[in-house]
Image (cartoon, rainbow, N blue to C red):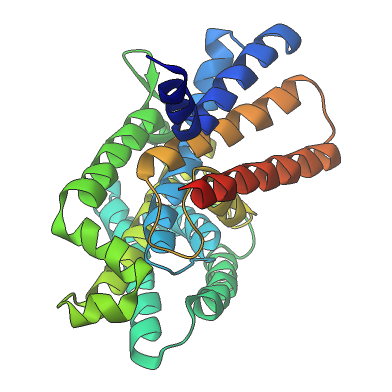
Amino acid sequence: MNWRDIKAITAKSTLEIVLVLTCIILSVTAPHFLSIENLLNVLRSVSVQGLLAFGMTMVIIAGEIDLSVASSVALAGCLVAYLTQAGIPLALGIPMTVLTGASFGVFTGVVRVKWEVPSFISTLALYLSLKGLALLITGGFPIASFPDWYHILGGGYVLGVPFPALIFLAVFAAIAFVMKRTVFGQAVYAVGGNAEAARLSGINVAFVRIMVFAITGALAAVSGIMLSARIMSGTPTVAVGWELDAIAAVIVGGTSFAGGIGTVWGTLVGVVFIGVIINGMTLLDVSSSHQFVMRGMLIFAAVWLNRLQEKRK
């Protein structure tokens, strides 16, 4: 292997290298960072939020944006709690909640393709509406109506691995397969790269846009269900700012905000990177205000590096 090969590998794996170096630094400076308990806690946290990032990856590659996912998370937790309180079995309430999340995504997609309303505007409006709806069905207070076993979905373990992490990895594998190995996945890239060229080549642009929003809405609902299982209540005030964390993970992972470029693997690394940074700063007792500053600087640096790599290519 010559120097040119090493440079090529390094250019393709910049974030992975930074992640490894960050873990090494935190293992020395942050107490208990490498403890099994802390690593499992990081894995559980990134798993719940990571589902949003996977859906957001598809949306951004398609040239769109979804600002409603955090409110959808909160609403999903409240809705499944409300249905349980009303006597509906969780075996029915959970799929109903997931379908509801998907339906909100379909609504966003239809508004986008039928009336050509920019997704930034429609999802911002939906963000506010879903937040208000979560407050309405709960009366502004948490609903604690779940049976004890429900906690497994958010805080349980399977063979020592957090249950949310298994869902996270399964969704990662499924989305990665769809985006890389299926006609639909290639259509998402084509629509994000040039929607008009995709239409002229026979791709159903409207269907692609509606589907990426539907998938993202469904994943947000699943995330909300797992979060409600972790805290054992439907709480309308959870997941504040998660939509920005999801977008940050996607962009840090190398997905172009202009659409048409990106990988699910990059998003996975971006999710873990941000989760490790947040966990490390918490262990180092960094104040919340300083955490926001550091996260912003890191995101800016990652985007800058990605832009440099794109120009080189």
